[in-house]
Image (cartoon, rainbow, N blue to C red):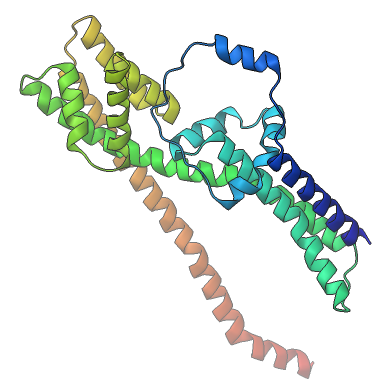
Length: 297
């Protein structure tokens, strides 16, 4: 009965979501007036993803999650790095939560119809655990992907600083060196730099302001520090060629130290399965002898 009640509630919720999707509510007049009075916002320097089936399934629940204050600050920064929109992320959270909540009830109902019913606490506990896991899974996935992309961006930023230093040494200006160095590289990180500098040129802002904004969106302190150094060169006339070379060398040393630390951690983790294999081999060898000794006593 509990499984049937959960299944019925899920079906009713799905019908409500379908009706809300077919007949969306009209925004209030105050919101429309606020949209007319607001000025144009600067475009984001990062593209966003459109999402898939999960985004379409959970789209009706995005408003409730936004009203609850989601996504948080850390999730917003991670989504900026992974190039995902807030609406797609919240829709995926809602869809995975709904699937995790209803799937155990559906399985329990099918087993009951097949003549093998389960006790109601098991499907209920499984539904709650699966719903919690589905709610947290998009955040964990976005954070892991964001950390990988941040590490790759820091590595590319060191090469970008080296290219900028070479162009400055050849007599190029600050803005020209930044643009030409970004056009030289390839990959996602250099595309972000190219997009930021193109946005700065089209909006008639300084390149270091665009790089600073990119650093804030990606949550990369090295890029924000680079933008501060470049702003001194662009406004105060400071010579930053030597500082760029020193920053690039420091980033390379930091990257090497982090890679060495990850390698040492992976080596330590490899000792765990080896110890388990040794323990299993010892148990496999001595178990027959132990059984024989206990049977003779």
